[in-house]
Length: 250
Image (cartoon, rainbow, N blue to C red; front, side, top):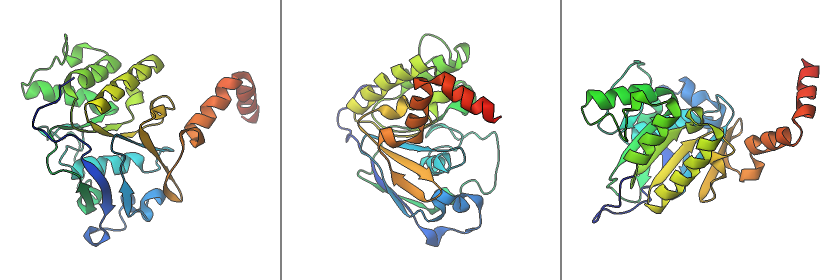
């Protein structure tokens, strides 16, 4: 991981994000019709770690992506130096353009947007930019998905602002536990992170605020009150009973 840089103001970097509805040019666009985001106006971010949780399609990744773009990052992932595009969509940035980010500091020493599903494209862009494709002992393309994901965080992240979209998609349960250790090291280095996740392991990190996205909007939720924790706990307590119930219903 990158060491602390002398003379650089430490995090946190973002205080809150505000949706300025006067800047929405197409209110009928799907992003603004997602139930959790329909009445969205403002969200305070935790100074260390903010988790976005919710069902598939609940809007957590939509807001995460828009926030990353509003902070000058590429929609498909990477650092501020990466502006590649493999998929073009004219209306992709409508929500990002309507967001206002209130900062603690004007200067953010480092920033990344990392999506598990686009890690291959990010690794390719790293090599295209000739900035070194290894980030460790081997090229990211010569590592497994999970290995490359962890290697990138270990060797590239440090003191800065980081957006992660469903990191568990690349990580086994054991790797998710290792990710918690990296997360704690980043927090100790004054990093600020916003993470969309389904993983009850990852969202257990204690120095964090969890926001639940659902049909009634976005609201704070305690870890043990998340559906992810409750469903996983219920299943692991009695997988046979849960399977019998599910398969009998089928």
